[in-house]
Structure formats: C-alpha cells, structure tokens
Image (cartoon, rainbow over all chains, first blue to last red; front, side):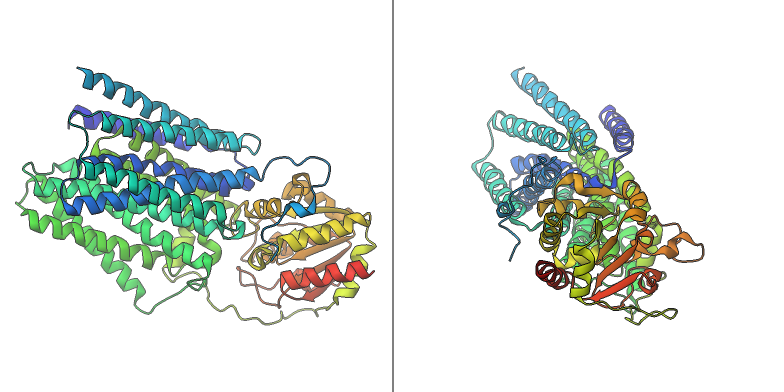
Length: 108
Length: 482
C-alpha cells in the first residue's frame, strides 16, 4: 500500500473515533436538528464534484459532473438552511407573550 | 513551486473546514449553542468549497470553459433549489426534506466515484486494488442511500403508503440484488488484483450492475418498513451517505471528504442508535422487520376488549378545561399529521387568558421524529419554557386537573409499566396520574405497537373522537362560549 493510502486510512480511522465521541449526551429534542446538521456535512461531496468537473473532458463526464454538482449543492445549501430554521426555533422566547399575528404561515 | 504553495493553502482550508465540522457538530449537542454550531459548520463548508474553487481556477492552464460552466451552473441550480425548498417547506414536512437532501448527497457521492472509475477503466493505467474497493463501496452505499432516502421521504410525504409494504417474493428480489452486488464486487476486485484480466468494457458492465443492484436494494430495503420507523431509517441512511462520501474521498484522494464523511458515518451511527433506543426499538429489529418477519400489518380499528369507553362531547370537555387550574397538553403523532400545532397553541392561549396554567408534555419521540414536536410547537409560537421534557413533567401529572392528549397513543400507554407487553419498558408519560383525562383521537385504532391502550378505558378518561385539528377547533370554540 502506498503512503498516501496509509495516511488516508489513518485520517479515516481517527475521524471515525472523533465522530463517535462528538455525539454523546444529546437530548432527544435535538436528534432531528442534529441529524439534519450531519446531513449537511456530508454535502462536502460537493468538493469531489468540483474536482471531477474540473477534469471532465467528454460528454459522459460532463453529465456525471453536472448532476453531481447539482445534487451536492442542493445537499449543502438546503441542508444548512433547513437546519438553521429548525435551530432558530429553540431560542428562549421573551417572557412577554409573542403576538399571535406573528405567525402568518401555516394558519390556512 | 507556486503550485505547491497554493495546494498547501487549500489543504489548510480543508483541514480548518473539517475542524469546523467537528466543533459545529459538538456545539449542536445543546439547544443553547446549536445554532452557532450549525453556522460554524456552514462556515467550514464555505471555506472548503471556496478554497477548492479558487485552487481549481489557479491551476496552470486553468479550467476549460465547460468545466467552469458545469461548476457554476450546477452550483446555482442545485443551491437555488435547495435554498428555495429549505426556506419554503412547512415545518411538518421537514423530515422528508431532510431525507431528500440525504438522497441527493448519496447520489452525488455515487456519481463522483462512478466518474473516477470510468476514467480509470477507460484510461491507460488500470485501477489498482484499493481504488477498486473504495469505488465499489462508494457506488454501492451511494446508490442504496439515494433510492432508500427517496422511498423514506415518499413514505413520510404520503406519496407511498406509510404502512409496511410486503410484496410477495420481495425477499427473493432483495437477496438476488444483494447477490448481484456481491458477485460484481468480487469480479471487479479479483480483476483489479490481477487474478484474471478484465476488459474495460466488462469492467464497466460490472460497475453498471453494481449501481443497478444498489438502487434496487435501496427500494426493497425501505419499502417494507413502517412509516413510524422512518426517522431511524433516515438517520441510518444519513450515516451511510457519510460513509459513501468518505469512500469517494479515498477514490479521488481528498482529505476533507474522508474526514467529513467518516465523521458523519460515525456520529450518524451513534445518533441512529440513540433514536432507536428512545423509541424502544433496536436498529436490527427495525431492519429485520423490514424483511417481513416482525411487523404485523393488521392495524384493525377495533375497540379494545376489557372495559368500556366513555365518550365526551366538545362542550363537556371545554367546561372541564375552562374551570381547571392546571392543564397538561400531550401532543403526539396525530397532531403532527393533522398539522394542528397552531390550533393547539390557540386553545392554550385561550385557556391561559382564563387563568389556567398550561404546560406541554413532550415525549422524546413525539411527532414524526425525535425532537420534531418541539420544532412544530416552536413554529406555532408556543413559548419554549412551556415545553416540558418527559422526566421533568411526569411528577406534575399527579397535581394536574386535566391532561389533554392530542393524537398520542403508545407513549401514554400504562401497559408499558408492566412486563409482557410489546411496549414494556418504553418510557411513557404518566398521563393516567392526572385527575381527569381528555383524549382527542380519530377512532379507537391502535398505535404503532398494535396494542390497546388501557388509558382509553380508564374511568377518568373521556374520549373526544375527532381529527386533531377539527377536535381542537371545536374545543376552542366551545371554550370561548363557556
């Protein structure tokens, strides 16, 4: 095995251990946002899509790279925005009651 | 020389990005720091993606115009679609959106691996053994998670029936596609190891077979699993996508893909386990149920055997509520399905205006996903301090005058305290300790566990048979009239 591969395997193993440790005593309330947050992180595959797009030189490659770019970008952008929307809900509200008129959506 | 210098800078951008992911994920363990955690993680993503883009632009000779167009247009198109759906989606539909994002992420990982493998197979240098293994794993995981997540999202959205779908011979198809994937993998790996020579054409056919097998497997794996288990399945597929991204990282030799992918793979696995535990299920149990062994699909809506049921009208219920000192609302899956979170908030505000102390008891798995109910109620502007976690609220039921159960079933079943029931050992809300109980429910139908709920035959309980939304509206109108 090449040194590069061995280094990559070491990275992989250490990152797995970090992943096991980083989530521990998370309250059930946060399971859904946390899953969504992790979901955005694997959108990093967008970097991979950019790298193959840069090297693409035939129609098939163009197509694969384009679809991969679109999918990856959707995963990243949508994932972070929807996670932010969820987490935004956990702000502690001011003691004064929020005005009911504030909620315009979803009433229909 | 200058090239090496730029690569060093980009490499650091990747490493810092990866560090942001780890710290961001850690901050998301607590509600207070969660939002900052997500923002930190997003900054890491901007750094990693932006750094890569600049690096590609500065390559000697630069990128071809087509490559640049693919990157820019693809990003704008996908990013725009993601931004639009993420901002406009109703909070009740959010779980299936997460599933959709997971599907496209898995698809992207598979495509990156496929593209690289085609290059190797048709190029001068044959793919070596390790690359072949990573490609095959990346392609398999990516395809399974692509179709699997689409099916899971479709079930939550109601496009596909949520009940377990068991097709005769479905198991055989599952086993057959698994065998195809395995044989294809073995042939490719042996070919790469030099045991026998594979023509590039045959290599590509094998790869196509593996992709097809993965896609079919994703469908046959998720279809037979019931809708209530979808959150756990999505979380599992999420971890699988992470692993697929890491495999793609090995294939193209990129550190940030490996780190971020492994991070999501591992943390996603832990999260899947936490979710399954909170629902008193094991991951294996859920998946095995999917292969047609566990779940009984008979959800017959029959009244339970022992005890009689007392039905109550909206007017009677309203009088109880209006003259109570303290009311605890127990929202459940039925409330989420009926999208009645705004109605419940309206009723609660009305009661508070009458001087009633109102709290919400949130079971860890209330709603369609763990934590989903908190999000739904928060969206309806229910003040966060009114939402009480199970352990905090359970002692309060003794002192509460009326417990109003809206569309929750198994999580309130006292049978969980006794051994020998399918829900035994599941943590429940002590609703039966309340002085009186009102249950809004469409019928006497059983919950996910498929057993009768003793709570409904309790003499203290009045059943208000209605859809969660209509029931709450009727109650609100009746309370106003009191």
